Length: 106
Image (cartoon, rainbow, N blue to C red; front, side, top):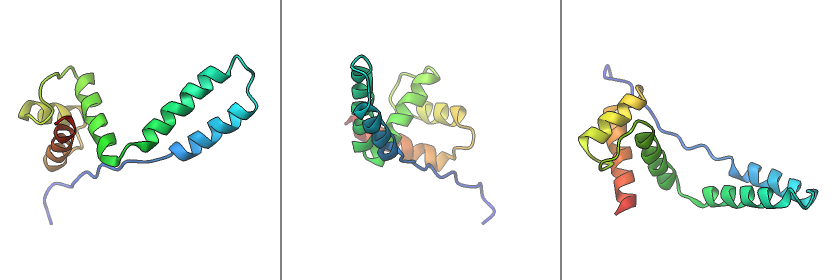
């Protein structure tokens, strides 16, 4: 009741709207614009196909990389680096995110 407030890690999805917009742009695109729009659409569709666990794991790996951490994602040092990069992240959340990221690598 009086403990530290838990940070909730929420994955927001908007890929369906982005894909719809890209498809509309492709329908009216000049030939020289099509390759870039097709690539963008493919990347959006690939991201949309990922599970929330995969997206969280990707966030963990990207965040650790941004702070220069290159070791195991579920180590104490990784959890410390995550919490340093994201000060509002609770220990419990950081551990859970690190475990999920490690499980994806296995």
